[in-house]
Length: 515
Image (cartoon, rainbow, N blue to C red; front, side, top):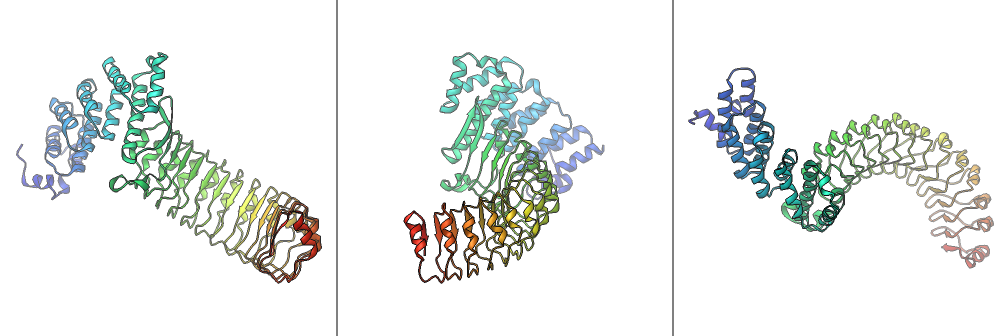
């Protein structure tokens, strides 16, 4: 076909938008050009353009306009078999399936036996799985019988031995093969990897730190799109890689329950993350996230959300809908507030808000009645509100590295508390109600301004660790001898000249004293 000068400019690197595949399609839809002319232009682009993505777009549009001519079939067949670009071969296979289902088998059969690139190979295998004749099933079975992977072969041999293989449809058999192809591709790129298969389908995939022992193009810096074909995948571990983005396609992994993306370089998450409705565990710590998509509120089964050490300034109010969330780790971000709406997280047991920019304890925390651990360490708190008493299930409280000068008088109502960390504040004394904390096992008062300890300290009968490092103590009360469970007493960097005899007797009974 002889093309005009403007069209020739488009086909090369001098792209003219007025002859783009989209413009050609728009002209066809608006009846500015007839179908034959539109097809002629699209074929010319596919055959002549040097720009792969332009050719890809032209093939997609060819599939949309209802072109069923023999020359279209022949073109697509030729592209599937011989084009040098896998994206073009894959597009050709997709349009063949869509427009010529009854004629697809022969070209797909050839491609199935010769294709080496994972994306078109998956498409081709899936096409075979949906063809309803015995030749396609025999072809897939023949390939399955040639599997040399030990894990897959073991399960395959068992199905054959028990004559169960005949019970599977061609669609199911092709899915087995697709799972095998994906594992084979990953092993080719990254060497030995860990995974779990169940009934010839990958259920767990561990790609942690695979970039540490590979070079060049095989570094895992983007999400492998073909993983979305692992439809039965429940656990995916991608931590310690160099991922900078996760594509929207991840939302296709509907069976996923566990996703670890920690220790990467992610700046954001796709909206499709909210499509992972089965997700129970999501680890995103040590990335570069500045915000979360509102779609995260769709993760109704989520129990653990780890966002430690990112760059979050705020979190979406819609997270209040995560009714099953038990652990929320926001340590090491840039938060100043905790949204009021999050008081709806009634299942929350662990809340980590340490190392942020919080000045005042967020009142919404008051309503988190199931909370067992609360950490607000490393903020700018100058006081603890009286309503802290409402957290009556609290077992661990971390308030170290703040600016506290006193604790609320009613802190003794926290009857289930076992560990309190208060080091590096400006405390000089403890409220009397503190002696009611009879389950307290660990108390860290290091680097405060205590000059004396209350005589009632001996009432803390469960205490095992008492850390008083870096205060201004001259002496300690003899009531310490009542702490029969005490194992460690740290008195370093105080003004105690001589260890009293009653402490020496405790040492002989097994107490370790650092002085």
